[in-house]
Image (cartoon, rainbow, N blue to C red; front, top):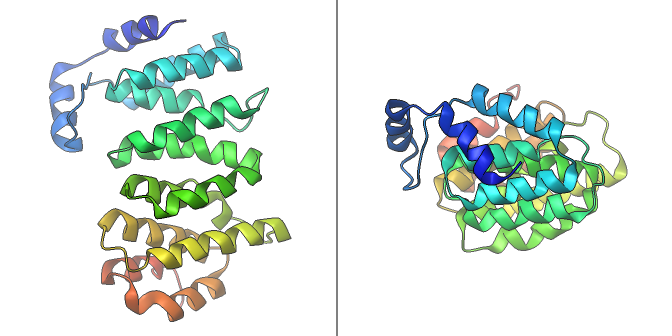
Amino acid sequence: MTPDTALDQLRATANADKASEMARYHKIDRPYLGVANPAIDAYVKDWRAALDAPARVALADGLWRTNIHEARIAAAKLLTQARIRPDDNPAWDLIASWVPDFDAWAVADHASIAGQKRLVWQPDRVQQLEQWTTSDHLWTRRAALVMTLPWTKQNNPKPGEIAIREQVLGWAAGYVDDPEWFIQKAVAWWLRDLSKHDPERVHAFLNQYGARMKPFARKEAGRLLAD
């Protein structure tokens, strides 16, 4: 399976009208084919079944480089699995290399979900995200929070999970004065998800930093908390 072959399959279900709609919606200047996500999922399922891990990484790399919206979505989906064997660094390194290319939420979120899986599998990789939090690129700063969302979900976190949770909350505290809407939204997203499992910690964060957050973000962060 080559990137060209994969693109031929994607183009077989292209829809010009839908492509135009997608271009208007995403507002990013790149090619759109107008392929729906369920169709991409079906193609990726077949590609994943036919390819070993190195070949999946190579195909994902080639698809991402095309800059075609659906190809980048497919590239991210190719690497979105709980286990990739062998899970040495190539898959994670490729995902991390995509982060400077992020320029809109849809592609960024699909790639970040793939990143979440690789971080959960090897949590020590989270330390690499520290440098992202001071990037001039807002999507890189945002990715540090989106990729670490799995650490909001433990009801009884282990000491190592607590340490990562607190580390990310430190990053979030550094973001509370950031004027970018997407950064404020990411902070709110992280806190809202954490509030389902550790509401006391979110209360403490908001008591300390909430007044410095944008009102919409403060409201969203605390939406699931009891008064």
